[in-house]
Length: 75
Image 1 (cartoon, rainbow, N blue to C red):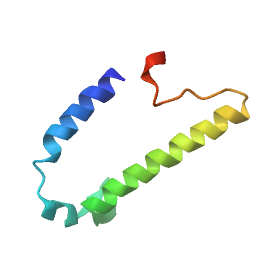
Image 2: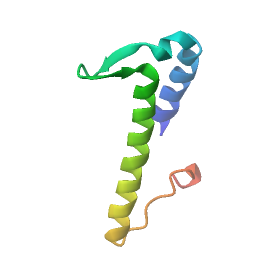
Image 3: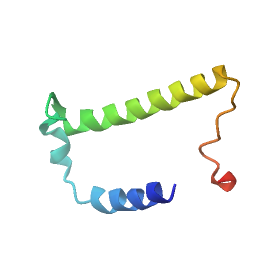
Image 4: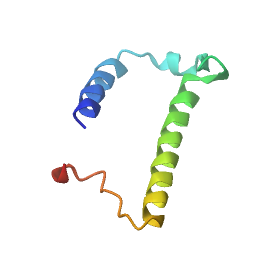
């Protein structure tokens, strides 16, 4: 979680340096998936949600209660 917090600080510091027009530029994600910067960011968000949900389903099917990811007091 410490690394996550450090990375979040870096993202927040650099986010404001990106002009709005940059989000509409066409890029190739991983050298093969063409789309806009904005669509790539949305893909990463959707992918994170999907895999987190998938992990929760697998853990619960094994009878394991997943950790409450939003509660950092238990770390």
